[in-house]
Amino acid sequence: MTIDAGGGEPDHAPMKALIALPTSAVARNALVTIAIVATGAAVYWLRDILTPLAMAIFLLIMIDGVKRFIEERTRVPDRYAGAAALIVIVLLFFASIAIIVNGAAGFFSEASGVSSRIGPRIDQILIDGGRVLGIETVPTAAELMTQLDVRSYLASAAMQAQGALTGAFFVLIYLGFLIASQSGFRRKIVGMFPDRTARGEALEVFQRVRGGVEGYLWVQTVTGALICAAAWILMRAVGLQNAEFWTFVIFIVGFIPVLGGAVAGLAPPLFALVQFETYWQAALLLGGLQTILFISGNMIQPRMQGDNQNIDPVVVLLSLAFWGKLWGVVGMFLSTPLAVMAMAILAEFKGSRWMAILLSGDGKPYEDSPPDAEKPEGTRVNSPRPKPD
Image (tube, rainbow, N blue to C red; front, side, top):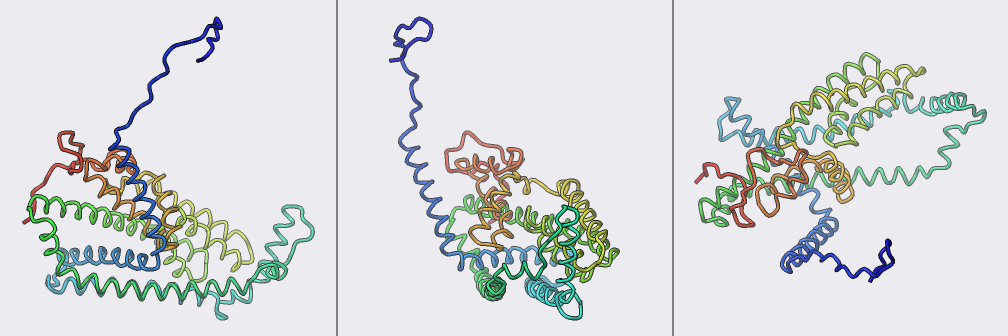
């Protein structure tokens, strides 16, 4: 019973009826929530096993794309296209690791002069910064280093490097077994989906997922190459040491959303502060790289993205944080492809299409797959296309 503010008389108006959800819907949503939490916990606990497996699957998709490119664009016989694609991807995989390791080691070698100059240069930067801020007494680089546990950082870096090499080894093992199991994939599909229509729909979902991941790789590779070309010219013009190494780093980190752009735009200018005695080189690199990244991210990349890249920016950020928390750097690298795969799969079914709509950027996961209200829940919503045998 409430009191009427106007006359003070009791208000006996009935309360608004609460919305009652069907028991089946409540139970289903509870089960879905429990399943999501359990899956997330399993993915985290099994990350040492699943991380190289996910990377191997990612490489397998790349190999398949390169194989079809070789079959369509070159004169290599089809029976050798798969082997050629495998060799190309594996060589690129090892070359990437070698370039990063050798480039990082060479940058701090005695020949570069950076290791002997880094201490005095940091002292000078601190003194100049203190003058700008009006601070008369500033600590030296040696004094700052004494406050840090350098040995623990070096040990952690060594453990990370060892883990990366071990992970690369397991990635290749998983990749070999995945390639070997491809021969029986079609028979498994036939066994799982004896009906030709259901089998065609399952293959269509697979094609959609593969197309989304390959589209993402294509966009990131092309835009990364353009960014690297412009960045290399800028770094060579300024005279930055190991410009080729930094160019490759910019290309690799470009596959990590948000954080990749920050690393690409800030790392070379920071090392330019150590290499040069003046500051204009670092300022020029900072302004030039930020301009290149801005033009690519706001003008070039959006024009190249198709429907399979229609991911909401908030989802990209959340996916980066989620998979980065679970799988570290590998999770950050795979965060956007995993989001693309999730949207592609969820958009194929009426019961989960609403989640694909939330993941999409404009509320339309795919233009050619409107919802079909006539189909019962759990069935696909896309208009069927000609199905393979």
